[in-house]
Figure 1 (cartoon, helix red, strand yellow):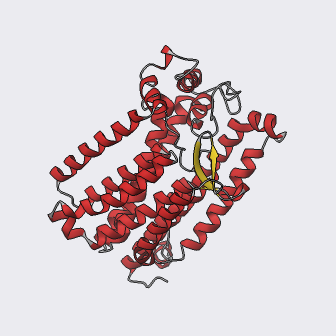
Figure 2 (cartoon, rainbow, N blue to C red):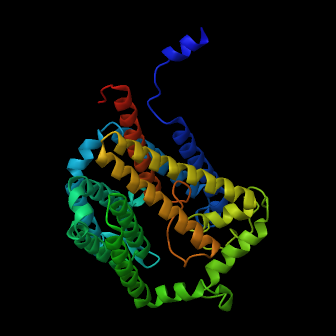
Length: 383
């Protein structure tokens, strides 16, 4: 009887484990934003939960937007890729116009007003991935057979990178280029072509990195931050102190010392250091495990789409998987001193309304791809 009921149970149209992982990361992120920002928030705004409330608003907008966009078929986005790319490039140009773009800490990356201010580079990442997935779908044979197949989109990536560097936002440019290269490699690019392109890109990005004094200082200080712990190495030394204080099991939620005006950007770029201090090695391993599961699951969904003869959906899932993996790896690497200091948030965890909004939209896309995969396996229509 139980077997019969199990056999008659309706199919699950979504990945429960994926949703559980995302909700866990968002909930934990809200907890850590509250913990890492409570003192700073109270001092500057006389409201201990100022940043938490703004982050919750970002989550609300993200879930709302994701709930709408998950209703669209994935094929719709393949047709809209070109329009989205042009729109992203216009926004990147618009944010550089004085009086329109908002400058914070020397970088002009935001457009809009008050809580509705959004970081344009986050929109650009999403639009570029959608466009590249569509290009790989349409030009897959040319990419696999000739060098020209992957040289064509490089011009567009170059323009977008230049606009990002004007803000400046070197981190976003690296994420977009690395994600695009990963997608092209999985699309069947010849290994020799990929290696040549990768080498050229590394050389160009290295030259860009050393072309500005502040970027060169970041590159040199991360190798030995203790040589100048109160200037160029200050952020990293404070982050490493947080890791050291955390030990195996951490000091406990809310007991971080580094967040008390010692560690800059403790609730944004360096939130992983606060996690390490309050939850120790065990806590950081759990967070890394959750992200690893999320990324692996995303790639599995992309692979399933390709096996079901849905190449655009597969490339799109691969792009999102690369994006999440790269940004997570860079964030953890920066916090732990393995990479030069770079302003990239920890997806779904760090404070940032724009990042949270776009991350929720990305998850909605992944869930839609998974939903269409499941419906096709069952031979059912999806609307």
